Amino acid sequence: MAAQTKDKELQVRFKPLAETLTKNEAKINGELLGAQGKPVDLGGYYLPDSAKTSAAMRPSATLNAALAAL
Figure 1 (cartoon, rainbow, N blue to C red):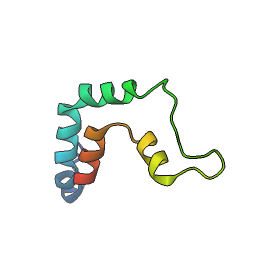
Figure 2 (figure 1 turned 120 degrees about the horizontal axis):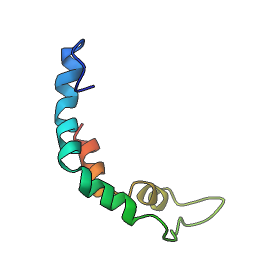
Figure 3 (figure 1 turned 135 degrees about the vertical axis):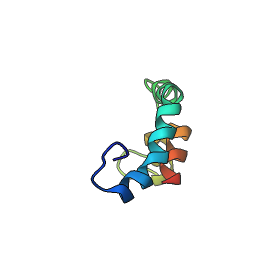
């Protein structure tokens, strides 16, 4: 979205996100890779706890912050 030139409004909106992701790519990859292969407590199999599940499925604080800023 940040690289396209047809819609300037979208380009302006997504440029900061693209820059943040590019700048922090190694850190985000490290956070995602660091979460792999470890058991996770979801608070139940049939009725998992939504907060625990969300935390387990979004292990990169850096990526989460970048997306929240969008």
